[in-house]
Image (cartoon, rainbow, N blue to C red; front, side, top):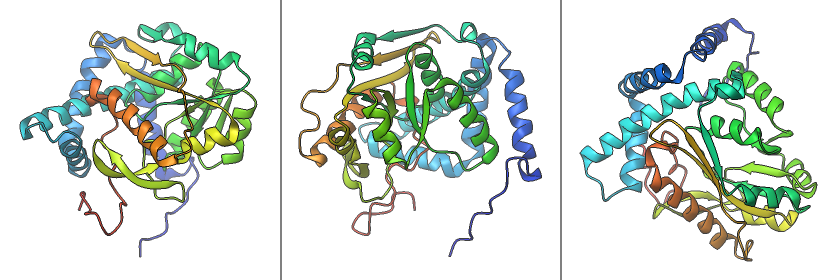
Length: 303
């Protein structure tokens, strides 16, 4: 049996190295982006070769999701992903600590769809996915719209403390990921709620459904939440442009959602995410074991 996780407070000496690392990144946040971007690219290549387990997870995911690519193309995409991951570290720290005028150029497209949802008393799940620029995208959009968001604390309590403080500062309300009542209450009060259901976890609200045509544990709660709350579902996605700017794009609220078929609705969610990921594949969070815990009938692709 695995050993139980030892719970220590964020101030425990065990986490002093984490605090020191956060201090370094706070200082690096003061650098201009013209320096941070190449620094992140170098750091990404170092991490790619330094942590073989996650490199293996990334390349397995890419082989499954993009079988049409060759092995050299998978390797190139994996290295590009690690550059995006490392840039995401700098973006996260900037989202936590930088003033708005120090953030890179950005644009919100389809803002009228968010405005319509915010003006309604129905509330809205702003449906998105886990991307490497997650915190930066959230910070930018929170400067122009009032959001609530579901969150899950990282395992490291020092990082969790900083992240929680930042989100509580910028959000109307940060809702623990397992607080269904809190989520429904926020929606029924007419709030916009940032919602990313793309990281599979076996629960009573999950099924094995295709993600990039590969069976994966899939959250089927999205349409159930929409039905219980009466909210809209507004698709939203953020990406980096080659020039270092950011585009945050909202689409019209989905028609016929929920449809009455939770599995079909969850497949619709997966297909939306797939469509967006294919546009900028290196920016999706491929280090996550997206195809784990699928049951005895399907192989453990990470073994």
